[in-house]
Image (cartoon, rainbow, N blue to C red; front, side, top):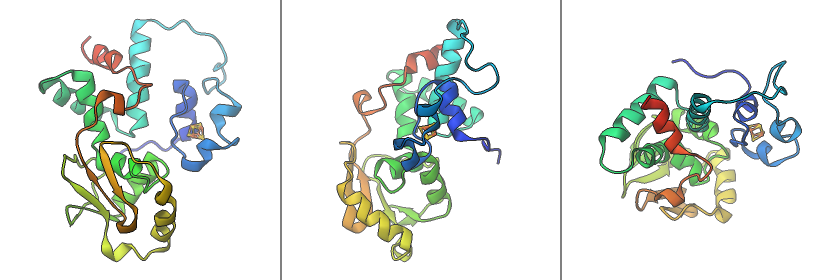
Length: 208
Ligand code: SF4
C-alpha cells in the first residue's frame, strides 16, 4: 500500500501548524516547526497569495495528514459523511476520531497517531476481545479496546502502563490504565474534537 515516506515535519511546516506527528519530540525544542515555521523548500519563505481554492485545499490536506489517511480513503470518508444525517463536516471528523488508531492515540497508548497506527498494524490490540490489526477500523459506542493479553508483558507496554496513569482521556472515552484498556462511551461532540480544523472548508473543497 502507498504511504508517505518523506519527513513528517515537512507536513507541519507546509500546513503552518504543529500536527504532533512525532510524539514526544513535538514537545521539545527539537521540533522543526518551532525552529523553522516557514513552508519547506527553496522558496518556502516567500509570501504567497492564497485564493479560496488554496485555502480549501490546505485545510483538506491538514485534516487528512493529521489522521494519516491517503487521498482516496479520505474522499470515501467524505462521501460517507455526506450521505449520513447531520452536519457533513462534523460527521467527517467524527469518523476520523473513531478510527481504531486514533482512539489508541487518544487513550495514551501511543505518543502520536503514526505510532498508534504502527502498534495497531503490528497486532497489539483487540476490540471486544477480537484481535484487530486494521488502523482504520471504525469503532462505535460500547466498544472495548485493549492491549492483547499475550502482549501485555512486553517491555513496551510495561512503560505504557506507567505513562498512562496520569493520562487524561477525552470525555467520550473511558480509560482503565491497570487493565491497559479503554472504551467508547459516546461519539465525540464537535467541541470534543480538534478545534483547529475548519471542516467547512473541507466540505467546500469536495463540493466544488
Ligand atoms: Fe510537527 Fe512534531 Fe515535527 Fe514539530 S516535531 S514539526 S510538531 S511532527
